[in-house]
Length: 531
Image (cartoon, rainbow, N blue to C red; front, side, top):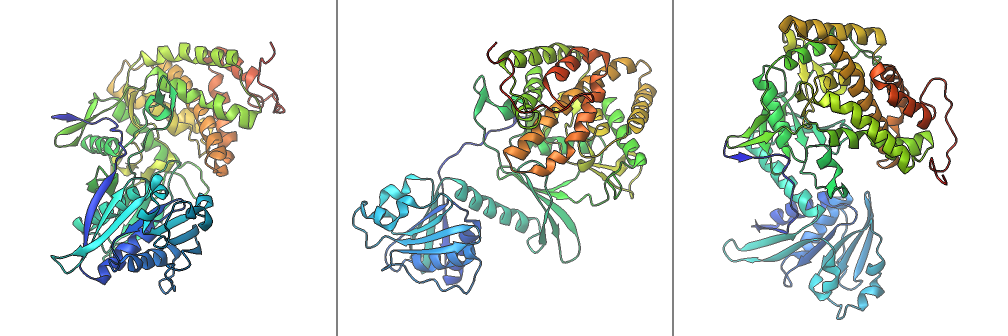
C-alpha cells in the first residue's frame, strides 16, 4: 500500500465547473437541480449579459424550490424584489439591474432579510457587498461551439456542496446501473448520515448511504475537536475499510456495490431481514446468542490494525486511548448532570470524577486489544435466516471502529441502550461468550474479563446518558429521553462491581436520582460554589 488514509479532514475551498446547456431543456434541468437543493440562508447569484438566460434559469429555480412547476414567475426588473413563501421558508427573487449604488440596498430591505430567507439575485455585480456571504455564483454566456449557452458554477458553502453531492450521486447511480431505481428514505440513526433504499423495476434492492465528509467542530481540548479526541470517523473511508475487513474475516457485512469516497456516497448490499428483537422490542434469545458468539469468534483471532480502503490506501484503526474514554465519560458532566440531574458540577467535583475514571481505565487499557466496533447493538444487527452459522448475523454501522478491549462490544450488545436485556439473559450470554472463548483458548480469564466488562459497561452507560441528554437539548430529539431509565439501571448494576466502588460513591454523591434510594434534586447552584 502506497498511501495511508485515516479520517482525512475535508478542506473547504472554492469550486468551479462549467456546464454546457445546448438547449432550453438543459437550462431548465439545471435550474430545477439548484432549486431542489436550495435551503434557507442560501444565496444564488446569476450573472450574464442581457439575453444570456438568467430569467429562464431563475424561473426554473423558483418553481423547483417552491414545489410548483406551473408557478407564474414575473420578472422583478421593475419591482426589484419579488417575495415568495416557500415550504422551507421565505424566498426572495431580486433584480439589481436598476440599482446604481449600494446604499439603495437598504431601501429594498435586503440588509434586513431574515437568515432563513433564500435569495436569488440577478445582476449581483451591481452590489458587490451582497456577495460577502458564502454563495453560489452562476455565470451564463453564449457557447459558440454548440449555439447554446454555458454556465460556470463557482463559489463555496453548503449549497455548492449539496449540488456537488447531487451530481456525484447521479454519476454513481448512472455508472452502477441504478439510475432508474425508486428511492425510499430510510430511518437513520443519531448521526448526520442519511440512508435510502433503492428498488429497481426488477425488484432488486440496494441501500444508499449518504455520509459526506464531516468538518471538524470547534476545538474543545488542546486545540482538538471532540470528534478527533474520541476517534469518530470523519469520512466514509473508515466504513469501507472495516466493512471489507469484516467480509475478509467471513462475517456478514454489506458488500459495497459502488462508491464515491470523496463525496461520501456508498451503494451497499441490502441485508434485508428482521432484527434481533421481537415485535414488542424484546431480545430474541437465539439471535442474541449468535451475535454473542460472533464477538467471541472475532475476539479469538489475531486481527490487523491496518485495513485496505482502495488498492493503494489503507485505514489505520485508531487506539481507543485514555483521552477518548475520558472525554466520552465527561459528557455526563456537560449534558446529563445540568439538564437531567439538576446539578452543575464544580471544578473539584469534575476533577475527582476524571481522576477516578483515569485510574480505573488505565488497568483496562493495558490488557488485550481487538477490533472494537463501538455500535454493536440491536439497531445495527440484522438476522439473515437464509444463511448459516454466524453468517446469520448481519452487521452494519461500524465506521467508528477502534482498537480497544474485547469487553466493550459485548457490553454494547448485552446492555443495549434501546432494548431492555433482562439480567438473567445478560448473565447467560456472558456464559455463552466465556465458553466460546475458552473453547479456543483454555487460558481465557473470565474473572478479569468480568471486571473489564463492568468497567467499560459503566463508562458506556455514562457516555450514553450524556449523549441522549445532548440529543434532547442541542439537537431537538426528545425521544431519546425515554431510554434514560434503562441506561440508569444498567449503570447502577455495573457500579455494584467491587472494582467500581470509588466511582459508585462519586455517582451516589453527585448524580441525584441515580441510585435507587435517591430522589431527584431540585436544580441548584454548581456544587462547591462558595466553598
